[in-house]
Length: 171
Image (cartoon, rainbow, N blue to C red; front, side, top):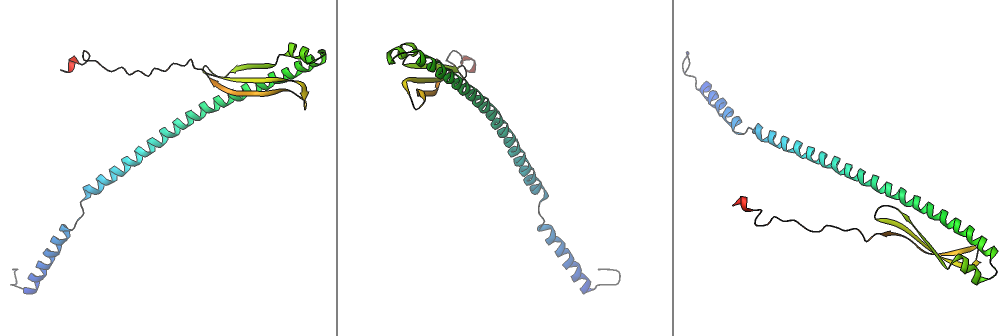
């Protein structure tokens, strides 16, 4: 009731306004849940970014190792080609000096092989068979060109587990 008396229209409007204000409050979204969701999304993005950077670094390091290994392999191939070129030159000299096939193989041998180290555990092995008379200009036949891994590598596949005596402090 106001100073001028009771006005039913005004009282009805006041009830409607109070009713609307009450409804607005009941339909409001909690600000805390959206903040938590935003924090979770940002943490996920940061985690994925870190994983991407770590993965890229590991791939880069592996690429560098493979590139170094390829360089060593192709250097060894170059050395092998030089050895084969020197072998051909010496076989030409032996051919010119020998009178027959037996004398040729006595000086040259029937096979020739050599190895070139690639790493502590790997080496390039090349084996050739000497030919007489040279067929189609070839003085040798390549019988093997392969990377061999040493069997001397010993792996430690034991697992040291604590024994009963080592676990006494837990009990």
